[in-house]
Amino acid sequence: MNILRNFRNWRRYRETVSELSRLSNRELTDLGISRSEIHSVARRSI
Image 1: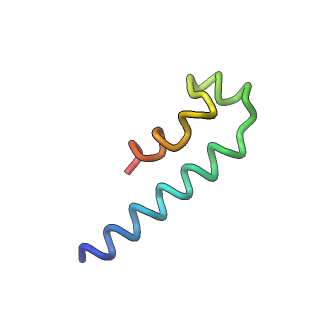
Image 2: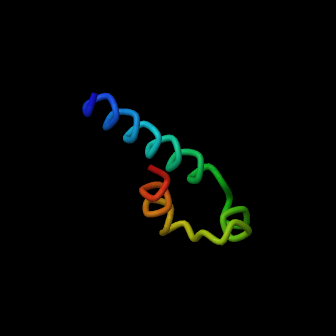
Image 3: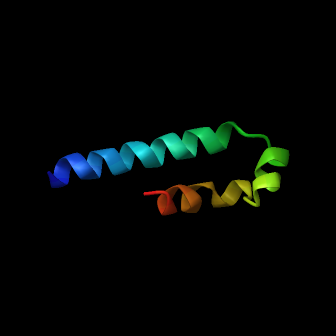
């Protein structure tokens, strides 16, 4: 079960990074996120 949970967490992380990366700088700013923070925000989503 640990492997399955880790895989799901990794997939959620990658999806979050992908979605945030597609946003424009303006949209990210509206959310209060800078482009350099995308990976740390994605880590917190797990």
